[in-house]
Image 1 (cartoon, helix red, strand yellow):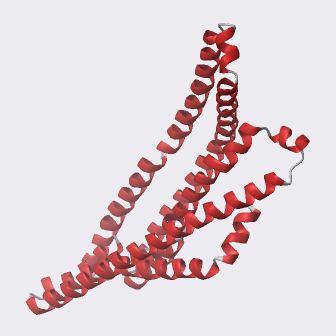
Image 2 (cartoon, helix red, strand yellow):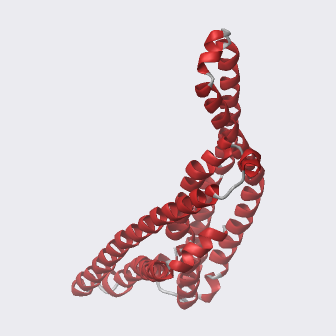
Image 3 (cartoon, one colour):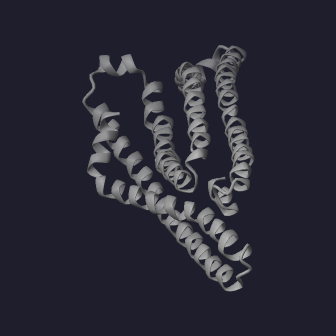
Length: 276
């Protein structure tokens, strides 16, 4: 983690560009429901074809800007992740050169291989996921709440409650998945160790006809690893349906309570579109 923080400090210029692109992308994306609401209120209800065309072109421009910024941000995120992998692998290689034999044996060759390959790959994927998914989330959340307040302060409780449910669910899911992830790391170290022993000792294994034992040992290692990965994936599989369930309930709540506000004349019909 220390080396990753050092790398991000060195690449703070690129990180700033990613944050800036993410902010622009978030506002461009949230501009689409705003223009949809304006089309309904100023165009469809008033039967103004010119307003519909003008607002439609503005919406198309917002979508185009969002798409271009999204491509640029994705390129920057991928570049940052690739550079982080190179930086971390260089640091690990430099560190292994100064380790004593005792330290190297304590970590084991299998563990060092795991650290330099799959662990850094996971870190690269985490960097991409953080910059493309986690980083925009609070920006979109704050902007959505501000837009909801601008349309109708009475409806702001719905997105706030939905976000609170998301945060609580994330906490419990990651709390349950954390110990499983730690066991997966140990299982992967075991697989690397067994595969290394099998390759280096293949002649001895054949000479003593110990193939069945080695096959069983290898199968057990892979099965233990597979069971843990499947368990972890099942834990995270709950997250996607939970998101869509909360989003669906939130949209129904907005339409339900928003319809009463429209009937009372507190908001226009397009305001419901902007909020939902």
